[in-house]
Structure formats: C-alpha cells, structure tokens
Length: 252
Image 1 (tube, rainbow, N blue to C red):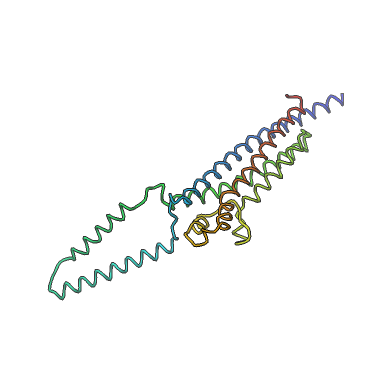
Image 2 (cartoon, helix red, strand yellow):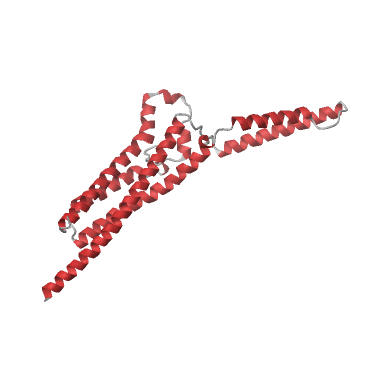
C-alpha cells in the first residue's frame, strides 16, 4: 500500500516536472529565434553602412551647429542686402535672395536620401535590437538554468547535455555584452551602438592597414558569428537533453 502511494507520488512529481520542462522548452525556442533575428538585423545594418549604402551622420551636435551657422549666415546676408537696397533707394523684398533660398530648398529636397538610406532609421533599429538582444540573451541563459534545476529535482536525466548547454549560453552572453562601454579600448562585445559604427566607418588613413581591417571585421563580423555558434551548439544540446529525458521516462 505504501509502495503504491509512493509510486503515485513519484508519478505526479514526474508529470509536473515534464509540464514545466515543456513550458521552458517553448520559451527557450522563442528566445533563440528572437536572438537570431536581432543578430541578423545588426549584421544587415553593419554591411549597409560598411558598403556606403547608408551614410552615417556626424552627430546631432554637429548637425545642430551646422544648421545654426547656416541660419546665421542667411540672416547676415539678408540684412546686408536690405541695407544695400535702402542705400540705393530701392524698396521691396530682395527677390534675388528669396529666389536663391527657394532653389536651395529645392536642391536639398532632391538630394534627400530615401527613407531606408537614412542613418537615423538604422540607428533607431540598432538601439532597439541591442535592447531586445541583451534581454533575450539573458533570459535564454536563465531558462536553460531553470531547466537544469528541474532536471536535477525531478530526476529527468540528460543532465550532461543541459549542463553543457548552460555553459555554452554563458559563453555566448560573454561575447555578446558591450564590454567596450566598461573597458574602452581593451575589449569589445558583439553588441555595438550607432556611435561605435559611425566612428569605425569614418574615412581615415588607418583603414588601409591590414591590422586595422582585421580588428575592424573581427569586431563587427567575427564576434557575432562566435555568439551565433555558441547559441547554436547550446540549442543542439538542449534538443539532445529533451530526447534523453523522454527516453529516460520511456516515452520514446
């Protein structure tokens, strides 16, 4: 009698553990897909800027100062023209100045790049992907950690696979985080900001050097690929863990 009750209790515990494992597996797969999408979008943004399809801005402060200086020059020019016309005894608005401003505005409208070629759009996308990527990568590692705990408590098996998957997710997280914000000039992560991308793609004599090119592509291309490799192997390990769990419970 006691043995039957004990077996029923163990069966209930195992069933609860399997339900929890199913929930964590679904969340883990969703987080993995989100991380892959964000990494792909960051790579697309980098290659568009690297191939000069999108021209990076020099910064908001530079734009503001340029706009203010241009506006000040226009005001000075208008004042000088009005004073000259008053000395000559002429009245009325300076048509030449107005016509020149109109032509300038038309030229700026024609030269304005397409929506997808504006760096501000891609800068917003990069910041959004960085936020989502950091949150989902941390949640991915935590999900695998909780799956490991459930396997230990419920004795579901596959501990070897889920433990390796957890360490692989931690390695991916280490290569992903933006360490350049804490240790600038020493080490960097796969995540980059629009300012980092704009500064790295600015023309300079150093870009002709082989060493600079190696570090440049290592920073923006190789590191994301390393993160992707670690995450892929972690995902493979979790799949093997799920199969080992089902095999252990004689479901398969």
